[in-house]
Every structure is written in structure tokens, then in C-alpha cells.
Length: 164
Image 1 (cartoon, rainbow, N blue to C red):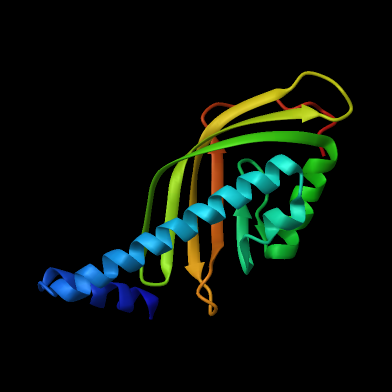
Image 2 (image 1 turned 60 degrees about the vertical axis):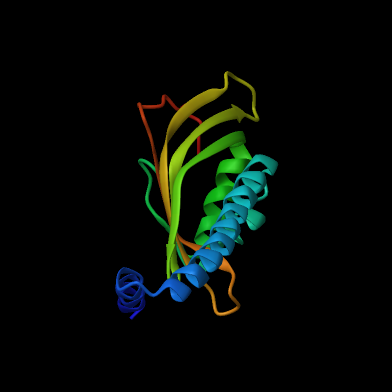
């Protein structure tokens, strides 16, 4: 149904509905700003080691799809995944969005990241860089939440044997 709504909007824009196009651009700007806020909150939560705040950016049935690991399906699983990771490592994450867009109640954000994980038990930090894509959905209250977050590294990362 959302796909049909997006297609209907596209057809209306192509047909030359200037007032609709103008209204849609204003709405899109607000939606893109909201999506940027989700991205910023996610990065801030990860850097603070706050798994609860990180998971709060996900829809209740959202999915975290990490590189070389099983998917964490649902907000509770996302939080548990991050709690386990934060127990062993202190993250420093930086994200650069390359492109974000909205079509009706669906949005996406794609870009690159750098991540440094510092073992809490001591040892050398682990650094990685990679790319990500996030799909988001507009919630009933008008907010945006992550439906799917997938990321993977540009090169293999050597993780310590003690990493949970």
C-alpha cells in the first residue's frame, strides 16, 4: 500500500501538479531533517555506550543487520546486541550521510562510517570503515523510526579472540 502511495505521488508530480510538488518539497525537507535527527541520535547513543537510546531509534519490529553476524530482529534484540558489544568495547563512531530521501511513509539514508572499538579490558583499539543503508518508516505519531539498518566494512577487521 505504501508503494502504491509513493507511485501515486510520483505520477502526480510528473503530471505537473505544481502545488502538490511545492507542498511535497516542504514536507520532504521536514522529513529529511527528522531522519537526520534519527541518525544523529543513533551515533550519539552508540558513542555514549547507551544501548537503550540506540535501540529507541528503531521501530518495535526493526532489524539491525550487522556485518558477519546474525541479524538482531526487534527493538529488544537490537538493545541486547548493543549491550553485549558495549560491555566489551567502547565505541567511537562517525557517520557521513551520502544520500537520504523520502517517498511517502518510507525513507532511506545511505553513507559511510568510521568506527574505533577500544577494548575495555585493555589492548589495542580496533578500527574499521565501511558503508551503511538505513530504511525508515513514518510512525503513527509522525516520527521516523529505523526499520532496517545494514552495515558492512570495506575490508576484513581482525577482532580479538575475547570479543563477545
